[in-house]
Length: 464
Ligand code: PHE
Image 1 (cartoon, rainbow, N blue to C red):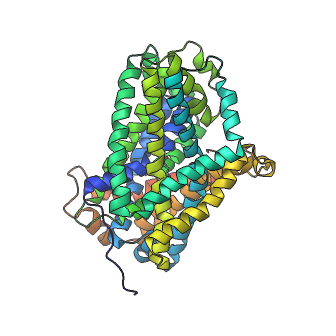
Image 2: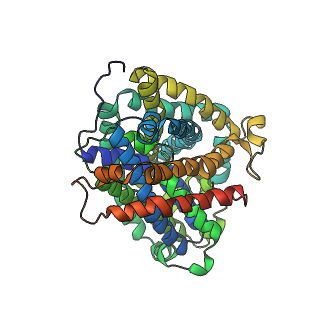
Image 3: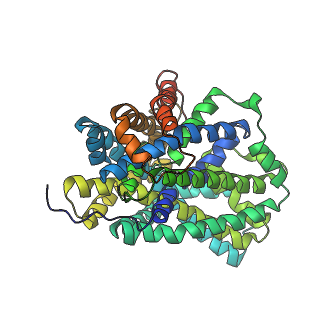
């Protein structure tokens, strides 16, 4: 073994929980979840989603943090040590997944900078009466140079944080941004609940309407629970590897899962309250994920929402914060792989990983119309272009495959003695039952994840 500097650690469980919640709470909560809830007609879908989070998400979250804390290594080394050498392949797949995911995620994150800047301008100069929201969004995503500048800026922010280290970079930044995010969200929630559409929004989200639930909806809820909890590619293994042995795996995992779920629901309540406040608005919502966040909402802030000029920039700041604390965790998976397995220094590793991934980001950014060949090819059915292909690959294939590997490894390869000693180590909360976890991780999660893969492979479903 080469001489190593001692591993950096979170200063406390609070530090870990905020960083891991920062990873989990991201564009998945603000950009994807409200849209798929809309697309699946709310109510019953939300209930199924909650069940997936509890029955599949939480057990796998516990497994990932357990593997990280036990081995104190990043994803490839951790899986090799906990499960056996060959499992390094699953770790390698995780690193590759991270690169592809960050490739397109940074593009969307970049848009938040553009909308933040727009809103700041409008708040001072007034909202332009002739603003065509759809055309403006189209102009943004097809403008190659602008796409490159925005995503490069976001990538630079991400690299800067990972470059500064776990304690001085990631923990410090998430400890500042996450409380700000919670504060802004609360402010928005109070305002949204005072609007006319709040009642209808709450009914739509929380009144179960099982008649409208489809099997595709169930699998989509399941697939999304991986994405939103940052599971299936080793982000939580990596963050868990900086957790000290004194801190409880189960308590930490539970906090992250609860916070992520809460924020997804609150964000959805806010957005739907605003949208339902305008009569007939919901008929115009279109079928694109991007539409709600970047086309429908900006204008409504200025025309409908009380204190809109104040809240609109805050809202896009919030989306940006949420995206940044997620991009950091994705880059950290790749950087920590270079650091732990390849002996590269942290500073070099973050620059190399950021640079390499930015090539993918640039290509994705140009694949929304700016550059024809990248925008028009079709690999998976109806969705064209590199951006859509990457999202499809990650959400439908790579995260479920990685998740299946982790749940099988933790349930069937690691022994009962080992996992029990990690989870029931005296730090666990009183409600925790080891036997329950073992049952879920051995049987329930693998079957559920296999169902997603089966639907994708055999029935050609698409959940991205
Ligand atoms: N959980 C993040 C979100 O909801 C996305 C993510 C997935 C981050 C996987 C890290 C790893 O936006």
